[in-house]
Image 1: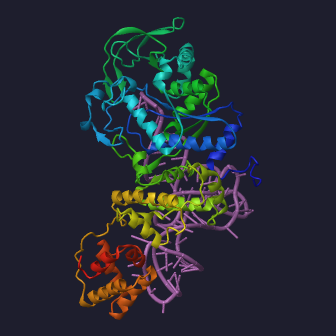
Image 2 (image 1 turned 180 degrees about the vertical axis):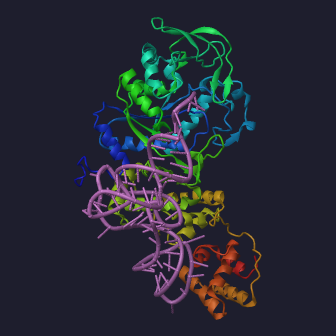
Image 3 (image 1 turned 30 degrees about the vertical axis):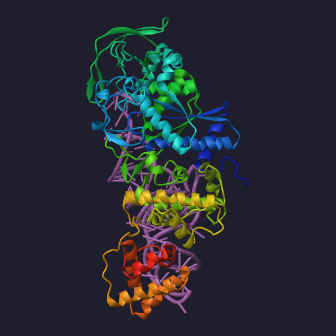
Length: 542
RNA sequence: GGGCUGGUAGCUCAGUUCGGCAGAGCGUCUGGCUUUUAACCAGACGGUCGGGGGUUCAAGUCCCUCCCAGCCCGCCA
């Protein structure tokens, strides 16, 4: 450790600074780090912020020997208030309303998500379906979070003291919230009972009985967004477990019940929920609010993520194109910067990660700052730090995807110098696992790396001189055992002796084998292919 | 309309806490490797730090103002 302990010093890795801030409060163990979302739309990579930001802070604390629990609230008691336009099946497929039992949703607007049937028919409720998706995302990221269902916190009584407190102090609650929300008036009651007849969350409380622990209500229509959700008119009585706190109170109630020490949240909360939540925690619940951290949202391919418009990408889709450690690396970047998650530039992201990794292992030199960040953040991106790991450059991995022949991929990688001869089988297999992802990326984005080994003879019409050059190359390859450099040399030789521009012959070669004017270094490429195939292709025979 | 966050090289971003030489990687260009080809080496180019004003010996950093993007100030989270 090099004198970086002074409080005035800023930590290189943001998560360490946040961890410092948490520790200044001398928290009880286990330290609780929370995230949470309302599981109503397609879970997408925006939600991944909630998981990964907390994760890196948790790991920073664990590094220092503290016990940490990372919990994640599924705010599944929330009312379903409008029809989502897109949903995701448990397989991760994004579907429209036409592909599912949409009426399961449409007929149940106004009910808590956990009381809405699953339109896919696979889970116990729509809320459960959505929460399952979140859980899968976290599993795919390899982040151990404990998902807590809000519905269950109400049902098992955990929230009961919070509800009681808020109702006891409802005068004060109105005053506090009224500073932040204009709509709060004398009739405002900070609790929405659930109608025992129709299951809707209502807002018309007619009486509160703190001794009995109940409220009376009339199930009236409720404004939700632009539309009104019809009430059934039922008059009934609900316990403190049979209903829901408004979000502005529910959030601080979660802090109290779960004893939260730290919570990251998006900038949408920064101006509304956080200031009011902080004050509610202090004045109503009389607890210390968690250490906050606002993160800037990122865009996806240059536009805001939006479940409703379908502009989303799931964790699963991301991980079909890049490795988990690369995706995790993305979240090691400072949280407050606006940044774009640009799929078309995954090659750049992966290259950046490879550099980050190489800096960690002192295989290349980075700036002092880069080294300091890699030192702290890299171990939390990978399963285990392995200096012998081999990384095939991402774009070259995409190039290897031109063939589905595993053996050929390996040969090409080896002959191009990306796989050391001495590498153990497991290391080779790990390195080649990138090929499938890079291939998926190339196909998905249909970019310059998306090409296939031409199975049949492409439509090329070489001049006589070019045909002669190709033939002489074929002959040279056929006659003697040529290594890669020798083949490369032969291409130049064939061009020179037939008076052809070198570049022209290279282009012809790429056209012949790839149907494109460019490709990987041609000598090692041809050397890796089956010799008789290469020879007959060069002679335009197959 | 009021408030908050973000805006740094062609691209992706560090650097802003607490003022002290404008930075990295990639890309581009040039040169080298007997040889343009998803390889390598060396070097160069690249900037109104969103614009303008102010404070200061000194401003990407602090203050004021304006522009752009997103968000909050209704509901919901």
